[in-house]
Length: 262
Length: 167
Figure 1 (tube, one colour):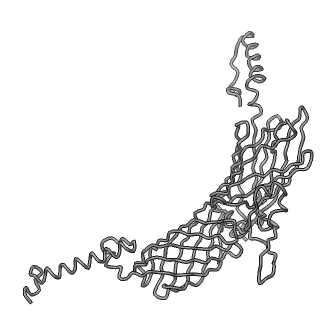
Figure 2 (cartoon, each protein chain N blue to C red; figure 1 turned 135 degrees about the vertical axis):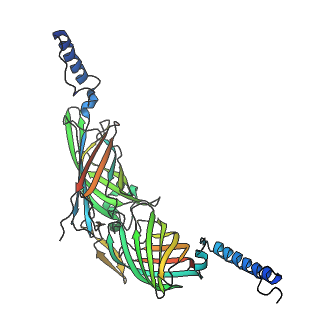
Figure 3 (cartoon, rainbow over the protein chains, first blue to last red; figure 1 turned 90 degrees about the vertical axis):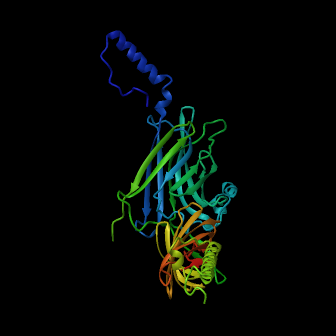
């Protein structure tokens, strides 16, 4: 926001009033213009099923908006905070891993089935001149190799039109936090980078894994994310902070209400 | 006997010397096993065991990032083991455990570093502390190492403990 923009205008004579109008216009059109592009973020989270003490699928979503409807700047990083007791690490998801290069080259289909952790979709935007283009991308969440003892989730975003591209985002799953590093995504040669407008991703859900039992390959459903047996007062809190390529920041928070007792 | 029961006589000096040697021996043993009881606790620690136990545990229940497993432990102190295992995403994992043996219970905690967390059965290795107990092991204390394998398909665990138990 522009400094002083919300201050009440003092009573002044006609000359000073004209000067004030010119100053306000200059502030609006001049160097303060980037402040108009300050973006806001919203965050959503949900569990399916909602049963305390039971495995569940966790869905995160966020949306970025610019006040004037312009294309927001590209994202650099997203830091999602989830309730510390949530069993994202103890889940049975991702019992194999996939190399980022393989995922980027050939997609999630080339990764072991047991490395798939979830899926989702994203809406991307970029402007070429006055025209704004939209691209829908499908997301695949896959367990990556762990060089440091932490869990790494790779997010592959694949779009086909108007730009056919796949990018892989690296995510570090730490204690109560998911840190997503977003690479620059070029739109067209010499065009601006693509901006992420919204994302919806689910960890868990309808996944099929395979194991060898008595010489046979048997399919099974991996255990999802463990919900704590008790719900904190006010629900399960989630928050996210967003860092954009232009150095600006946004944040959002939400909570998942406590499931009803059965 | 010269000096009778007097501690000030030559016989008394011998007895005092023997007591001092015994106390020094106990202190050295305690130091050797990494046990440092304070004052009166030395008198309560009537035995020290080198313990090696192995347990095969099955999943009982969970709450978020905490799993509770139990099963049979065999080895120096056989019995039923209940483990509360916490894994929050950082490489360090935590476990609180209780061994229900015939002569009493032994409680302790451990933390270790998990290796290869995206495999089907990550393993961990770390330090173990025995912090108390009940029955015959009411004054149990000691330290050692804990090795564990966590099976992510079934949430079962295999644990091995190696250490010194004083009680």
